[in-house]
Amino acid sequence: MCSLVDFPIYYKEIQIFNHLQEAAESIGRFTMGNMGNLGSLIFFWALLVAVVAMATEHRPFERTKGVNGLDKIIVRDHRGHSFEVYLYGGQVTSWKNDKGEELLVMSSKAIFNPPTPIRGGIPILFPQYSNTGPLPSHGFARQRFWEIDANPPPLPSSSSSHAFVDLILRSSDDDLKIWPHKFEYRLRVALGHDGDLTLTSRVKNSDTKPFNFTFALHPYFAVSNISQIQVEGMHKLDYLDQQKNRTRFTDHEKVITFNAQLDRLYLRTPDNLRIVDHMKKKTIVVHKEGQVDSIVWNPWDKKVSDLGVDDFRRFVTVESAAVEKPIKVNPGREWKGILQMSVVPSSCPSGKRDPKKPCVHHP
Image (cartoon, rainbow, N blue to C red; front, side, top):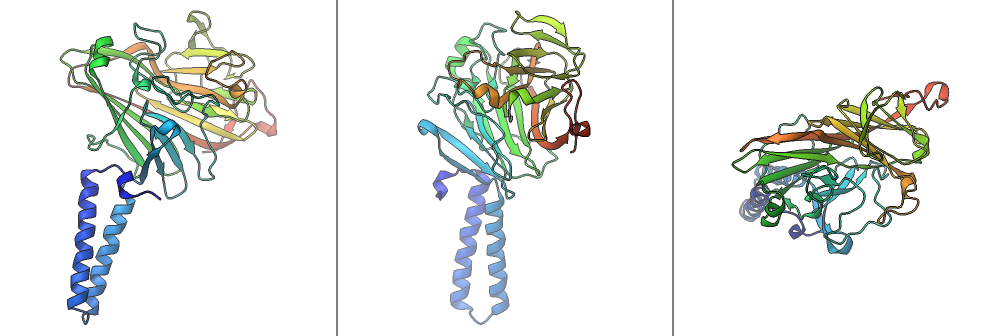
């Protein structure tokens, strides 16, 4: 059990608990002096129950310690879905369905020791994707300590979910030395009604001059076996083969399958992509907005220092990205990007898998 001090304090929460305390004190005074008025007593008890409901419904998350004492946030909804996000890197490290099944993969050799990036989950690659610019590979956001955003600007949303957390990363003096642009990066991580996970990124230019950046969210999706899945949605699209110095090719296959290392940056991809897991008879739907590119990656048996020898069998990454055409943000303006991930049942025609044909999805 966590005490109230384990939870972040928001202005609205302070108001709620103040009202709760006032209601309790009022009931106490009324009970002592007006025991005969049963109707009024019932009214005050109803008021107390309503205030308690407000307090418990609002942003149900827990702040606790993770690996090596690093702060992390755990968010659960009333249906049993959950996610975890570390303040180091603003990195989601767990996403579970209502059966407790983990939908993301963490490396068995993940290092939770700053400034080393954490391998697995959903790393944030900002303000540079890979080695496409002068910064260290994949930028610096995944190696910074984020803060809980206690008072974020309104975020229009059609979701009524209260299971979310808002984080913020502001440019530091050290950041400005290597990337001379003042910014605020706000991140909302939220569970949807059916357990889908949405990451909403908002990057504000706090400077007096425009800046450009490249970007990707890098989810390690859990699969039954990498050799038994296919990725759909890239047919006839151009891609840059990152194993061949980003040479440009066109993908003529209807689906992507895996029998060796694959590292491709697909250009101008659809907003909806699909990962079909034949053994589990499920499809992971990857929906993106504000990011026109996608990366598909699995290292196969290539040695990666902080990845276990057999970890490659358990995951695939299908990333939302903006790489070919950098995002430009003018002073005082804000860019917004969305990555939404959901899981639906799926099946292949006649119950037999054809590795060259798409499967049927049942939303």
